[in-house]
Image 1: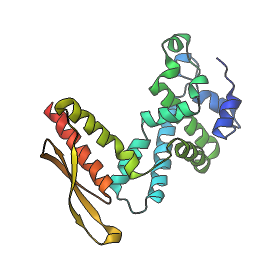
Image 2: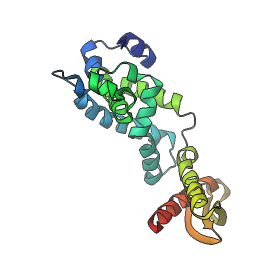
Image 3: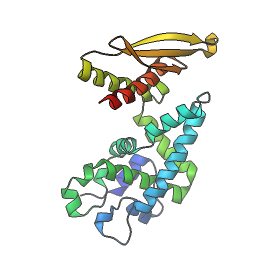
Length: 226
């Protein structure tokens, strides 16, 4: 496997001053060296949590803590970091044992996401928070074209539709049951119906957000009914 770390640095738009740091960040424990990337992964996880939290705080100045937490949770997790890791082809550069490589290690989501966290941790150690933030946010914005409440909550409606089609052969119906407040600060209450039965209601600053919130509640209810 070509360990051309320069190519990875070009993709990151960041050049390591200490090559040992990037090598450590890319070294899986199976490679059996005196070092591996687990400590850098631990640090990178905390750094990314802060970076994304600060980014969302300023990007959505009118959103409350609950909404911000949900968006952060959708960006700071194994699935999201796996997506970012694949975008920069981290799998091509990781140092693995032959056994782990033969076991599909270069395609494992957990392994890729851990390596991504480790790289951000390494950049933080070497160059500080602002540089780590620039690298991470650039990658996030490039791979998430629409970072918004609506787009990041869309899975709840999709999940609910899949559940209702499998269980009842129908799709859920959403109805606006109330709206409150002045035009510039209106809040909508939406109910979701399945087979003409109301399953959940939720409030949102737009109809779409309220639908997603109601869908999330309905998904949990249907899962409990299984």
